[in-house]
Amino acid sequence: MTDSLMSGQLVHYLLLVVGVLGSVAAYTAIHRLLAPPPEVDKSDLAMLAKKDLGMTSAFSGLNPQGGLLDRIDLLLLRTFHLDVKLEEVHMMMGRPNKPSPLDMLHLKEMLGAGLAGFIYFMTGSPVLGLFGVIGFFIPDSLFNGRIRARQTEIMRNFPTFVDLTALTIEAGLDYMTAIDRILKNAKAKTELEVELGKMINEISLGYSRRDALKRLAMRTGIQEIRSFVGLIIQSDELGTSLVELLRNYATDMRFRRLNKAEKLAAQASTKMLIPLFIFIFPTVFILMLAPMMKSLVSGGLGF
Image (cartoon, rainbow, N blue to C red; front, side, top):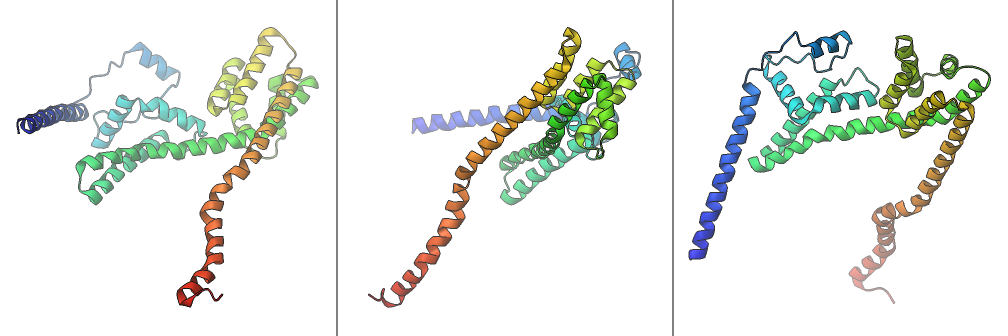
């Protein structure tokens, strides 16, 4: 009796502590959400330099003194540092007009709140409703899928582009002039040509070749293009022959692609076992055993 009383008191105190901590956390969140923002020093040299260089964020239009939605957006961005991550994901998606980084944030918020409300409506439990926060991370898989599809499209034409670049450089052109010539003669503008066109435009706007190449690697997020950029920068610094480097690199990429295709082909037979066991074998067993079971139920097997 005493042990049960002590355990009951222990549970009571634990619940009391959890309630107090939860109240403090809720008060802090509400206070940060509704509190007026601090005054921004418009004479800050860092902000002025950032403005002069055109380094504006996709979330700069959010008003800290605006409506509730803007305050929620800013709270999430500052708490979880989502601004840099969302802008990086948007850049690797090819900077489409829709969705913008702000649209991506709103989609995450809508799915998180919608799933939490649905779980609460179905179960009636606020605690289980908190698991609806998982919906906040569901759009990440959608964005990553678009990034992988874009990277696959870029890599589909990349080995051919490297061969053409090596051939054009061997004809006597500079590598940037060679890339520009390839882009002008391209019939269809794929994602690779679009990114290379951005690199050429950045150089014409005043970026150094080294910075433009690095920005190309950042926008694509592909290891092969990072290696390609590293080869060009190394050739510039050391004065080595770029033609042989590019040819060897293109050969190595094709060899790795062939090995990957052979590996996927070897795994295909193993992966086919899953649909065989789930769909094919049960159907075959039903077709074979159904007449026998019907005869057994109706009066014997007949022999």
